Length: 442
Image (cartoon, rainbow, N blue to C red; front, top):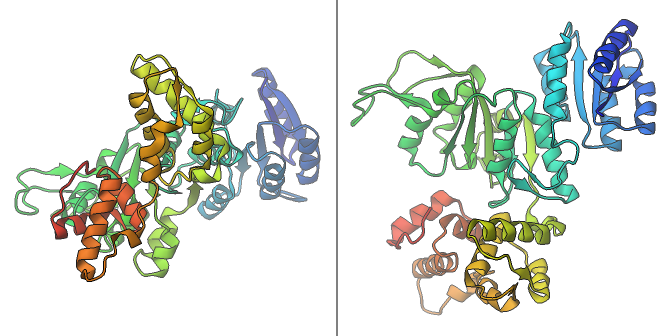
């Protein structure tokens, strides 16, 4: 049975909400203020708290902060008659799951409760959730944060290393949001040259540039009514950042070659594997755009910071890919498990999954052993010193380092760029500059 704590200093409102929730089969606890709410929640934590924003002995933020200290995964919904956009943004940044204005209909509140306490809420982080697997406390906190922000309509910034599952978290947020019936449109900001990226995002009219024989809507217009995923937003050229900022502020786009803006109804989720705050300090990313995107931040811990997930993920991927290939599922040998748990996994979950797939392809017996991991062991690092040879020019040393890193990553440009500490755009430019073969580029 679902259990809700209703906090409101107005007795008629408490009674009405209690009666409606009881009618729907809920267990209900009520409180008339902040102190009573915290005391009752500490005695009997529950998965959902609905609280008034302003009460005589404090505000709803105090309720939420206390609830978070006791049970971080509890969903919190605010009710207020004094709402404003700044107040809504504040509560969402603090971790609220929803924000509803009085007077409200119970149907509206009930729908919000159902969204928040769906089948995943009964065991958060257990098993596979929206294609995402992870049981560690750190990862469960990330999932709880994603569920919280999903019920709002504010823009979200997901910052995490490559291979951690940023796009999966973004898709989870969309699927749990009120926009889930609308489209989810993704665009990789690192995948297009600057001129094409502008057209891809904002669209163009016929004759806007050479070759524009027909009008084309941009990704913002295509995502209207749904969510736009800006993947690797840190790679967006500085010249396009002011235009993106204007769209986020005004919710209208200026198509290339058009004289009239087009309105768009879209929520933006941006992802990046770079430290945007550092880029702001270096003058590489606009501070106003950063703060506009970073209304509610979501971070995903790298795999090395949640070692308890390594073995569980490995077994999950083993079962998944063995079943997909109609293979008998082998077990993981003890020495292999030891090596896996000691590995730093710089490519995170993506590296682990590809590693398991390679072991499956190479295995011949009922158990995967450490001997199959030798290739992985040799590819863990590509130190710059190995490329240094006396008498070579710096240009030639750079070329050799690029070649060796690309070879070590089987041509994976994204992984190679991460290992070298450069952006994927710089990696592409260097490959072109030195005329290196695009093996396995993506």
